[in-house]
Structures are given as C-alpha cells and as structure tokens.
Image (cartoon, rainbow, N blue to C red; front, top):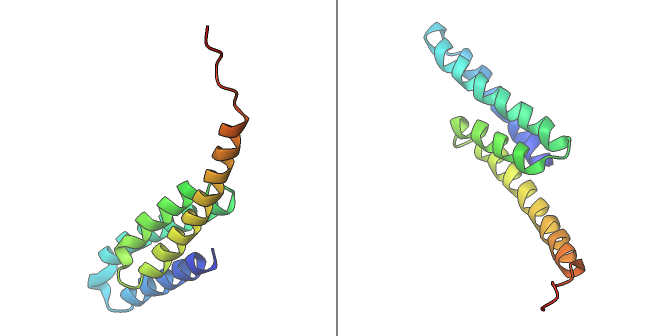
Length: 104
C-alpha cells in the first residue's frame, strides 16, 4: 500500500512539473490531473476495503504517467495480489464447509 501511495504522490509532482513548462502544456496538465484524480480516488477506495476496485482505478490512472507512473501501478498490483491470496483461502474454507448434495 505504501508503494502505491508514494507513486500517486510522485505522479502529482510530475503533473505539476509539466505545468511549469509553459502555457502550451495546460491541456496535457488537465488530462494528467484527471487521471491523477482517478488514482487518488482509487487509493481511498482501496483504503476503504475494496482493494481490487481501488487497485484497478490506480492502475488506470497511472498509465498516463509512464514510466514514472509504474511506481503506483506496481504498488497497486502488489496490493491486489495480496488480497487475491486472502480471497482464495476464504473461498477454499467456504467450499470445504459446503456439503455435497445427496444422491437419490
């Protein structure tokens, strides 16, 4: 989770560095900030417990910032893989608890 948050902060700094390049870059800045906002909202969705949905939002938002955006993308992917392992264990426990139907 920490790597994802650090990546989102770095993406914000990259966005503002584009703004410093002159007035002709304002359009690119607006696009970058829209994608950054998606990543930012995804971070809060992940913190609220919906790690898969939040991770997907962060990955989509980080694509515009490649190559530096890979920090957030890799962090989100790590968070989603850890969550998938937990989910697999829960599904196995639930499957073991289910009784097979009786045969007539």
